[in-house]
Image 1 (tube, rainbow, N blue to C red):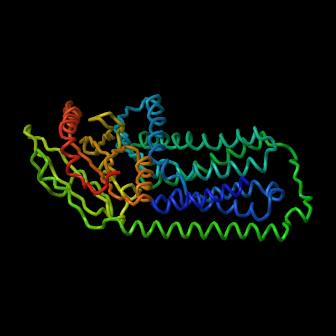
Image 2 (spheres, rainbow, N blue to C red):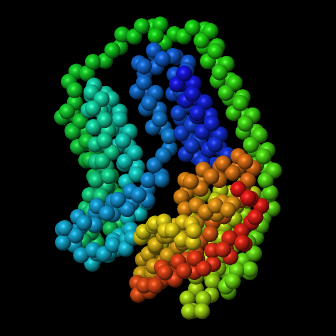
Image 3 (cartoon, helix red, strand yellow):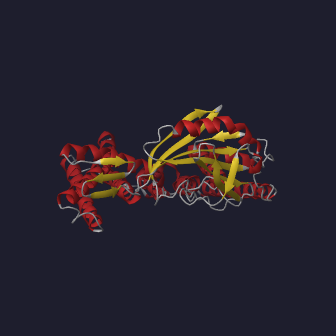
Length: 426
């Protein structure tokens, strides 16, 4: 019963992911359905004997990219105190680390995600073949999760320390990648040594399986095949109906009539900030001219044709080669919530970005909640989504910039809402 419900769940999850273009849901549904199909075909008794291989198939799910920003910050949080304890003068500006000898960036490649994924997969496999106790298995898997995170922070610490001691002669260029690879091999070897220390001696392996364990009666196989065929037919019909509904949504581009806004606007391409939202039906950007002489940059992206995705890993709120993340938080503002991002550049400039997703009459700051709500709207025949973002660039001496941008949005939020497309009353 459980396997049948699980398989139906994967079909529903895949359909939901397909409609909302949520690749993670589609990947989870695809790679979860395979062990469930095998389970349905061979039955409960045989599935018990191969439960680990069935579970191990789940590691084929391509996941981990979402953890990169978190791992970058965590690595920096650990490495900086270690450098300070060593006595190295260091100034942290977001993900940039400044020492007297030079500057370092904890980039995406420095997050250690590849080693973390490899370590967790190896940890699960090693725990299965080396330990009989579930407690020991879980403990080793947990170790394989924690060790690479700490090791990656030590690697960053070692690179900066080496560069400092050699006046940037070593570990400041491509050679630090080689050092990192060697370091990871050493850490993996130590992980194996830890496992060997506590490994169960002569684990019992039952290979005397009866041949009829993997046999299933013909009527049962026919019944399983019938269920699978019916489920796939239902999913195919459902997807077809949703696609037809999706195509019936209004597809003409709708420009935001920003000239109705109660402030002076100069529309032009943003050269300093440079957000990028691919395949938007329209994007409008430029500067809001204030009486104090300081401009507020704005960027609007509208999606209502179903051809592009408002929330996608391909979209960028800022140019990551020019700016690095300092902090981000959600604040309550104007009867809603606004996402606040603070950035820093290598040249010493800073920038605040206030943004939110506008889906119909609702505002969202969470990518996940907005994506799920957007997908639900498509299922109901609605597809009208926008990104609204405002930003100010400043220096460290400008202490009132945050309050200035906050007051601006509070004052003008109602006027901004009025220029949004109104064909979605969701």
